[in-house]
Image (cartoon, rainbow, N blue to C red; front, side, top):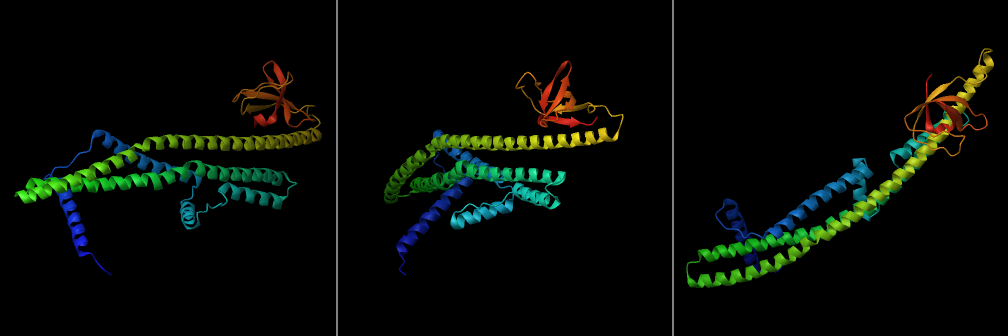
Length: 336
């Protein structure tokens, strides 16, 4: 292998000169070329953008994939074949076990059927969670990671190169100040002129790249909006599933209560013809759909007068002098 000895010696000399200049600046024995305030502000904004972008990505990844081991596995798989793993979530596992338990304990029993209903809902939530994680990664995490790996990496590389050009420039200034004769002074002036041009050119390139951080922030705002939209859809879909599940479980509980009350009526000759009054807490607001219904306010306590045999989803309730039917899924029945 052929070596260019002259080039090697020159490179070694340049590195040594930079090291000396850097050391003297730290010791305060040599002057340092300062960049203008605007450039320093751009550079500081770049550093803040880098540190906060990295932290936000870590935070979002921790939400989308809570298990640290799974995050490491995903990272390695993406590096190997660029595929995102589609593993089951904890909600999926919970749902699968509940469904299996319900089938083993008997779908026709109260406990078994309840397990089946809740388990299927947990599986639906698990599917929504995976879909949300994929969407959030695609619309937020991935674009920010791409920004770090491409645009920001280029900026940091050019800024590092600017620092070497700045060290070369200040080293030339230092040599010119120490020049003892005209020949050395003339050579140092030519080196200084060349170093100044290279520094100015690199400074302009770096400045243009740093100014690109502003448009990048605008793009990040759009990614944030996409993340919020994905979260809104996810939580809305989850709420719909849970509201439906609560309605189904509420109807089931009410039917069980009616059965128990009917059994008591059959076994006790002194039982009244209607079930005993019960109280219930309203879970959320409800606007009546017709004059036969009552409107509800979340948190209020109302009296349940009776069930409706032909419509197990509703009960007759009383609030002061007002009476009407209301959906049982909006209620939490209290012990008498």
